[in-house]
Amino acid sequence: MTNLSKIVDLARKNTDENWEKINSLLPQYTDQQEFFSWAGENLKNSDSGLRDLAASIFEQTKLPLDDAIVKGLFKLMEETDEENPYPSFRAACALAKKHEDERVSGKINQVRRELQSFVEDEDVSEIAKGYLKKVEQSKHKISNSQAK
Image (cartoon, rainbow, N blue to C red; front, side):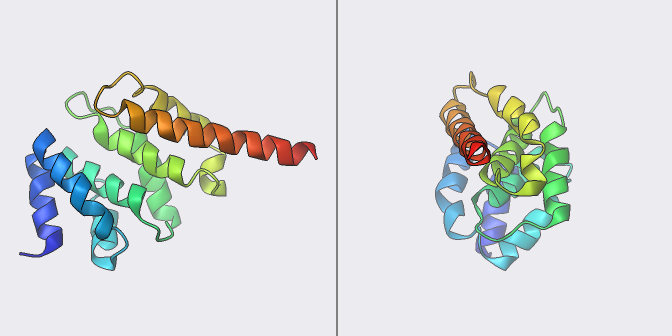
């Protein structure tokens, strides 16, 4: 069983305990092409745990995101899933991390609104606040550089 298939199996089960394991394992793999390609193929997966995993990979990767991935992340972020809201949250995190990218910066208010909607969620509140702070700091840098 490959590392990817082990992590995919954990995401399919979609429990808090499994996500703790995923979050500890994932950073070492997100820049591997196998994981990156898998994520691109699974942003639209019907399984919310797998959509969440795909967005999490894009959140953590240092590899550049192509236009199709950026569009897919925006689409995922805009989805409403009462059973599992976290794929849209992770998509917003991935987009917030790329907030200086012109494909994202023009729609940063959408990203900000999605992150803001998770500030009261005890499971991800600190993550949401952290990304909101980064986005705000960037906004101030941009407006300061335009003022010069």
